[in-house]
Length: 159
Image (cartoon, rainbow, N blue to C red):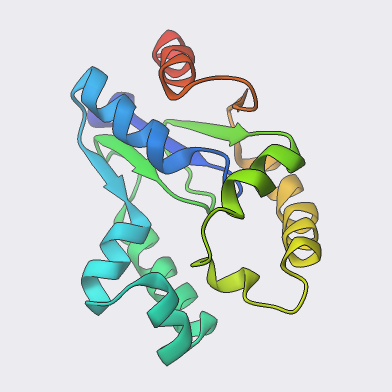
């Protein structure tokens, strides 16, 4: 099996379950996990909200783009990201909008939601990004009523 056969990218909107499923998938199948947010936090030495506050969204996106360019086809492992990376398999984790909002609203650290109307901003971002996730994904898994273990089982069944 070549390295490209051992690659899965998890994409989806905030609150879809990418990070949690990525950790569980890595634990269960033993593949390394590459979480782009964790890698960017390490690069800057501060949290994502602090990156947005100190340097702005543009600096974060530039760092994200540079990082994604290093994670090319052929990388082995699980890539957890909110953007579209073209690897061997791209799995879009999706959920009902209300469920994702419920998950996200428990945390006040989402930089893009630091607005007077975070719920409206959330809906706007989801509306804008949905078609991009759909066009980039090889598979789509709805996480709305599924546990992390159930979603991980679905991904394992795909590979």
